[in-house]
Each structure stands twice: as structure tokens, then as C-alpha cells.
Image (tube, rainbow, N blue to C red; front, top):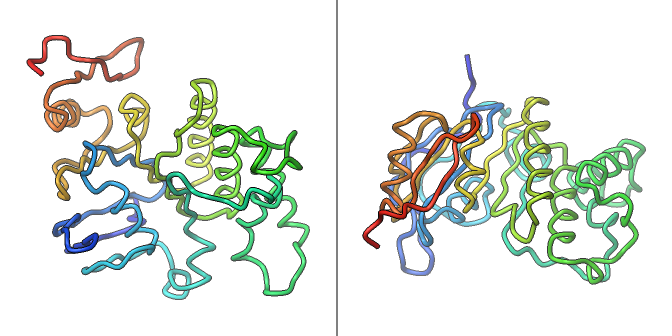
Length: 259
């Protein structure tokens, strides 16, 4: 039986005076990779920020797999890791120090990093292939390298749940493939990964798809389900089509579209 990692009930959120999420009722399964996709302005990033507790909202967000004390304050930061979109870091920090920031929820206010902190950071940097340039500053990095450093920080938390908003931004195709391998390894360790992606073909490699449009859930289903594929095509106004190529589902332009 698959457990529920996160449950939302009647969640509403606004940005300024504009409603962005409208009466969201949703469950994310534990130990699976779920991708949130939809058109621009659908509310995808807002939904992910609600899960992370980064913005105010109305309704209920529960974490059934966590104990009450684990889902609050600093304890929550140990169990839920966040990788945001276009995050800004201190350019004078080294890549190693950026990754070590992921260990802050596990450290005391004045304690030096423990042996396990050091181990977790080294493991994360090697997983993202950033270990060899760990002493370089963020200012010296390309956009893709910076994204890998920030991913290492999120992995170093060793959280049960990882929330990633546009994690493939600035990554070239080989490093996108590396990111896919990282996600698969996290799932094999029993982690729960929830990501917002624009890359539909990559999203189809996950376990479940959540389709968001105009602040509402229009579909939730398995990535290989034909109903999910039809729903994806519909939400993108049939300008794409989902096809199976060499045992993988991919998104292709619909050349017969009227648009």
C-alpha cells in the first residue's frame, strides 16, 4: 500500500489580489516522482511554494508520513528540501559552502559541521558532479553549474521530500540526463520527489503527472496512462502530441495543429 506524503484540502492562494490556486484537493504519493505541468501562468510554482510553506494560503496542507513535530519549523526543514526557480545565492560563497547550507537544519546555532554533515555534502556534490570545482565561488560558475550547486544543497539536506521548481533550467542535455539519474536514485532510496517541469518528455518519465490550468487541477494520473496523455494534449491546446518511441513516451510538436 502506497502512503500519502502530502495531502491538500480546499487550498486557495492569491498573489496580490489575483486568485492563483482555487480549491485544490490533492494527494502526493510517498516514494514516487510526481511532476506538475501545465501552461504558463497556471499556478504551478505557487502550488509548489504552498507545499514548501513559503507563501500564505487558505486551506489545509498535511504531511501524513511525518510526525507532528517533524512538520513544523526547523524540524520541517530537515524533512522537506526546496530547490527554487532562479534562486539567487551569495556570489562570494564557494560551491562547498553552498552545499553545506543544506545541513543547517541539522546543526546547532554555533556547532561546527559534524562528520556526517561533511559526508552528506561530499556525497551530494559528487552526485551532481560538482565535487571537482567545490572551492570555486558562485560568481565563477555558468548558469548550469550554479544550478548543479543548488541541487547539491537540496540533496545534502537528506530530506524525505524534495520539492524542485524548474530544476532543469540552464542544464544542457547531458546534465539533464544526469539529473534524471539523480531523481531515480533518490526514489530508489525511498525519497519523494515533486517537481515542476516545462519539459513534458522528461515529466513523462516520472510516476505521476498533475496537470494544472488556470489555478485548478484538471487531471492527475500515471505517466503511462493514455488518459493522462490525452489530458496533456488538451491542456496544451493540442499543439503537442504524446507518442511512444523506443519504449519511451515523448512529447512532439503537433504539426497538424490549427494554431
